[in-house]
Image (tube, rainbow, N blue to C red):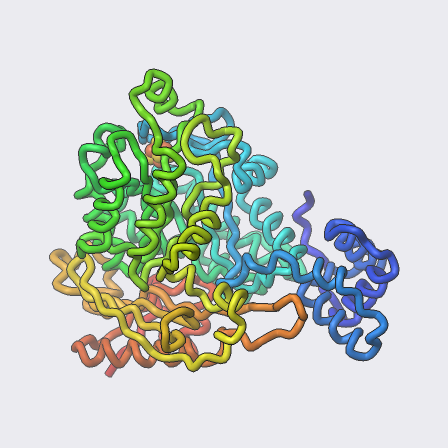
Length: 547
Ligand code: SF4
């Protein structure tokens, strides 16, 4: 697929209407057919293809004037699959090139041509392989697909996968991220520009049409060191996915992870004190674990201030043919839980989660034919949620309470009065405030932020100089972008001033606790927002004096 940027649209609304007329005339049977007509119309007029939300807006405008044009089938095709942007940010996942990971984890598959741990039939990996792991083309391809499916792409969470990021050479890492920024800068720009260096590309992204508001990288706990923190910030990283798997040292040793739980504790503290969001990968049913020990481990993760991650991804251990665990399974040394056992473990985990944690996944995207033993139900999350509902249980995690998600089954929640909550907890030697606007019953979250008031950081030299002694705003998020099937767009939670009010509250709390400065680990694409709130860039953070 070509990555050439398109010409600007002179009148997006007129083009969208012309395209909709062509669509109505051709009566497409599928979404692919529909977008083929849109593409043909745009290219005939030498224009860029309109985004799906523009097509939808044009459609609504047209049927308001001429109701006889209404075609519910076309409308359904246009609004389909919007669920992916319910969190308000479009996710773009890319993979680094294959390389030799220093890890020796027994459950980890190896496939020729793929980065360690990834299979060529996983969706994101398949896309990466198509683009030969070229970061620029992966991003452009993904943005095109999201645009075609009607997702707004103005705010992007970029997730870089591919095993242990920090094990790659530094020049490769910097170049990889620079090309991702370049792709976002070029996507709707009038002309393609290659930035001379990463900082230039990031500066351009501050005003680009597609702004990277968050950058997530995945790595091992034992690779997190003070110099690595500085490098991560230089790249614009805001969140780390940490391969924790379990906090049980015996299981970590048996699985040849090559680090123990103290590495996890150290990495979590370093990351949190530098303002990063911390996302743990946890793996139930590892060799040596039982449903009971998994539940104990998870309870420990949230009861001990040494851990308490902001997010978790649950990847139940599975036997894959190219992993050493396959031999263990064949010889009878390892047996995964029964389906019922795994289901009960996940329900037990989900029903005990704190309000501040988001469970991003309960299963990895491995196609079932590749799984020799272990869970092969690809809709495991839905199965767990359905079973919890039947038993009258609810998960309090952030994802399950995102306003867009809750409103799908309960539209009345959109008119609930937002109430401010403050969950306070100790973590890694500091105090965390999870401030949120939610409905009074705490069933849905409109917006939230994570404020960290660091305790006595034992060695301030471990921190980037610009944030020493500062309170830290680790995350600010407002939810929105909801277009229901009837085409009426209820008010989005974004842009309703919740973000601003949360910032005021966080600054006030920091001031009351004696902090004179606030540091925000801002994604590159949101620096402009913080400037409007009086923040100025210092090093890789946005800083404000609180006097
Ligand atoms: S560190 Fe990660 S990528 Fe490397 S072997 Fe272990 S699980 Fe696989």
